[in-house]
Length: 146
Image (cartoon, rainbow, N blue to C red; front, side, top):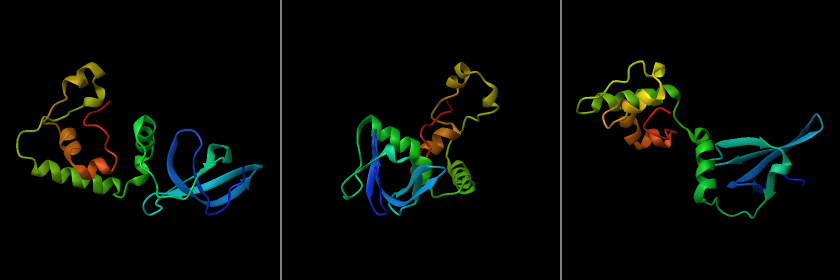
């Protein structure tokens, strides 16, 4: 299928957001379609044409269900607006303002998973971060380490 600049497309399998074709190129005999999406067109990626399907040009729908949640999870890093440094500074400010005693997470990267699970709680630095809507919008997906 041939796509043209300005076409509105979606991923053929799984949907995802509606994207606008920004350009098409051929490299080493392979065709690639560069698409942009997001509130301010801040997200972009290139796709093989067989991964895309044309769709009607309506507002970007917010899907529901497993596929939409998976898509949001996989693309959350694309929507980040703060630098890593700014996110860390914001987190440090939250920890400084926290009233109460925090359970420190010391050398947890060396603990087996069964011991890390025991460290989870309401007064950890990760829980403080997760309660903040700004950090969740920046991509924090859970209040614990996997």
